Structure formats: C-alpha cells, structure tokens
Length: 343
Ligand code: PLP
Ligand code: COI
Image 1 (tube, rainbow, N blue to C red):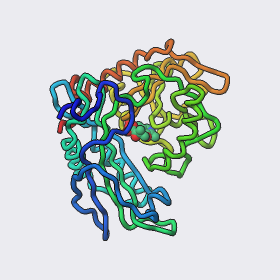
Image 2 (cartoon, helix red, strand yellow):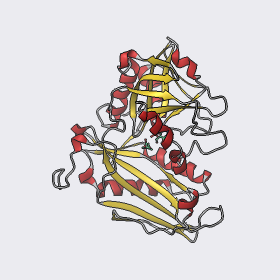
Image 3 (cartoon, rainbow, N blue to C red):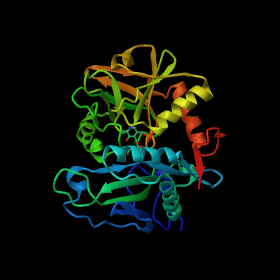
Image 4 (cartoon, rainbow, N blue to C red):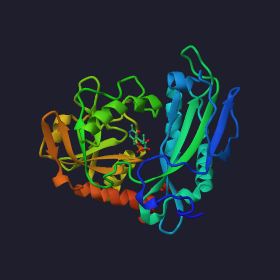
C-alpha cells in the first residue's frame, strides 16, 4: 500500500486523528496483565460505570516513529516513556506496565502500521499514543479493578500549524494548570481537560497557546499548554525546575543535555519569574515536546504588555538545538547518547 492507496496526503498533515490499521490491546484482570495482542483498529466496549469515564482514571503517553532518510524507522528514548507511564500509574493507583513489554508492543504497532509512517521528506511522523485506562466499573471513588492498555497510532504533521515558525503566546493570570501535591507531573487525562477552555480563549484572541504560571504566587513559569518552556537568559538556557507540577518532558531533558554537551552552553533548572521574560537579557524563548518538537516563541503577552523576540525569528540557540535534536532523531547526526532506537 502507498500513500495514494490509503488516501492520505502526507505532505499536508496537521495534528489531527487519522485512523490507521492496527492497535495493541492488553487487559488487566484478576491482578495481572495478559500478554496483549494486535487487533484491527476499532471501538471499545466500555461500561458506563467505568472508573475512567466517571472519575478520570486514565493516563497516556505521547511518542513518535519517524522515517529516516535511509528508510529506517526510529523511536526516540522509548524507555523514558515507559518509565514515565509508570510514574503516572503510581500516582493514580493504576497497575504498572512492564517497560520491556511496553517497548515490544510499541514496535509491533508501528510495524503493523508501517504504511502510515509519513515519508522522510514530508517532515511528518507517526504519532504513537499509549493509553492506560481504568475500565472496570466503580461507583465509589476508588481505583478500578480492571484496566486496559492500548496503543494506537496516527500520522501527524506539525502540532502548531505555524510549523517551525515562531508562535505568539499569552501568560494567563486567570487560569493555572497544576498545583503542588496534585497531578501536574503525570500525563493523566484530566490535566488536559482543564486546559481546553483556557486554550480556546487564548486562540480566540489570536494566541497559539497559554503560558501557565505557578498556582501559589502566579509568578513563576509552569508550562506552555502541553509543552515545556525554555528561555535563554544572560546566555544561559533555563527551564523551570521539576517540582511536581510540571510534566518531566523527555524533549526538554534531551535539549538541556544537548545544549550542555554538544553546544557548550550553560544550562540551569530554576524558578523563572514571568517578569524576567520582559527584560532585554532574555534573548530567546521556545517550547519543547514530542508533538511540539522545538517551537520558537515569537512573542509573549501579558495583559497590555507584549515582548517580541528576535523579530519573530527563531533564536540562534533555538535553531541549533532544533537541528541537533531532529538530526539525531532522524539518524543524520551521530547519536552519541544512544537515544534513537531503530525498529
Ligand atoms: N508538558 C506537557 C503537559 C505535555 O503533555 C508534554 C507532552 O508530552 C510535554 C510537556 C512534553 O513532554 P515530552 O517532551 O516528553 O513529549
Ligand atoms: C505530546 O507532546 O506527545 C503530547 O502529549 C502533547 C499532546 C497532549 C498533544
């Protein structure tokens, strides 16, 4: 099968769900996970009393399979996603999934949907969505006794329609996304449900996303929607500390390591006041994520004040990091870290 026969224009993909051929499903019953299997993509039957539907006991991961220039299919640090899934699982009293079985299942789903991987020169990817839900019925607020682990995939283009172009974002003092002691560090569904209205309001005003602040002081940077935030301040690459309210992004961790080890930049994880972003010594800002990759931020607005960065062009460090990260992910730059896995 080729792109034409499956009716997909890989060169004009956005970040929208497109149904593919196969998915992986594994069930947890009587205290253990079954072996799981590949099945044709389709709907699930689920009890209206499912814990996932009533109380949001759902977690997910997000990853990409890429087609390299030499035709290989690559995954990026899948072991990190396996670990993070289990960190989310622990917080939500969801049974953990074996990391090596997680990786085997990922590979099997990607191979089974190979014709949906966008070609190298399209810049697209096969987005992989591992999902773990408490599907057992539960009336009182307590964890389900039955769970389902699913992996489905969908071909995608850029997360932001702007692509690698700089986006405009707004700092919100009206909404926050996570608070200390809560679930901000997990990828649970509810964390995202709460950001839909704020994101819609921001989009209606012409912004691509919201930059959230901490919920106590409404001062320190948290995240940019579903992506981590980075800035270059006095030449140092800075990103907020992971203190439990921020998702520990695999992309941002990789970016910090690349900046330090491949570019020789100073890096620091610390509290960043939004006020610092409006000063001249803050020279670049960008956000990172599996979906967002590295997306430059062209302007940040708070109430009546707007700061524009580099005339809306990606900054020098931002661009270097983008080239390094995507080069490693697509096997074009030597991967001395052992991050990219060919399947
Ligand atoms: N922050 C949030 C809230 C996210 O949903 C994501 C995406 O997974 C990220 C940050 C970036 O994480 P990663 O780089 O692991 O994709
Ligand atoms: C990702 O970057 O993989 C994410 O999970 C973001 C997503 C919510 C679209």
